[in-house]
Image (cartoon, rainbow, N blue to C red; front, side):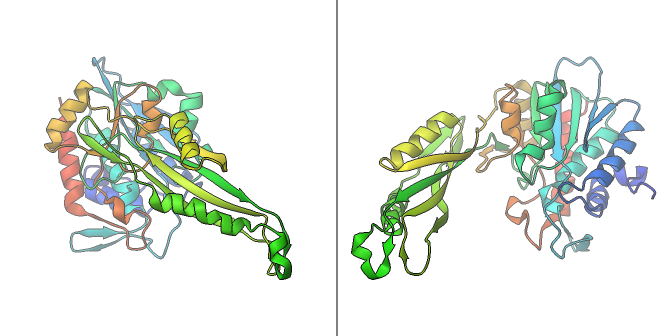
Length: 356
């Protein structure tokens, strides 16, 4: 099948967005889109191209004093009656329009049409962001091709609705366990009901007051919430265990260790088992390319309330920001869409920043 990413498509970020959306690429099914992206990048004489799995890397080697990474994931969540794309007035509807093929389109457009940028550029089009992190293309690159990530600054083209969102929150999940003693419900006084004991855990959560932290002018609001609860043995048994799963979103001034210690403090007296954790990322606004990028955008940055792959760059000491045309509130929704005007504005802003 002919590659739909033709020269005419590559020069128009709006048409490129729609073409990328029309290449189905649910997580773990990115080969077709990765093949197409790799093919067109290899046609650009100013780029050197490599590939790891279904992650495609392209870079300039112009001898510039600084290097900037533009990164975006190729995969989407499962299709939900929203494929292929459709256009209604100024909106493109379809799976991945917001998260994040409109952002990928900006990076691919620049890779193909900007042979003489002011910085050396690395473009990363990576796989499997929407699923378990063990499959994440950036994680796999960090493990086996870390040199691909080396840069002075990075922009992750996640949906931000055209606003710069700095850094990101850290996240952890933990199990808070209450215990009791089993008994027949006809003789319930002989047992201790672990589900009833969970009431104290839930009260602590409802009384919890989240910390708000401002870093480099960006305000991060933390949160601690129950997200799942499990308990019970049978309809006639007093349960001896109840497990409440909690999720904490923490400001990037806390380490993962500090965040876990805080959860232990909140639930003092109960068993707490960590199941998943990822660090946050500081705003990263001090790097020279970041300051110049903010000037090009012409608006103050906001804190990223959520976790993104900017944390993978931050772990390597590389400051990184989130910026993309999609609306994060529409990500994964059945009516997911992106505004054509936001795509054009994003392309103009990035070109103004990166052009020599």
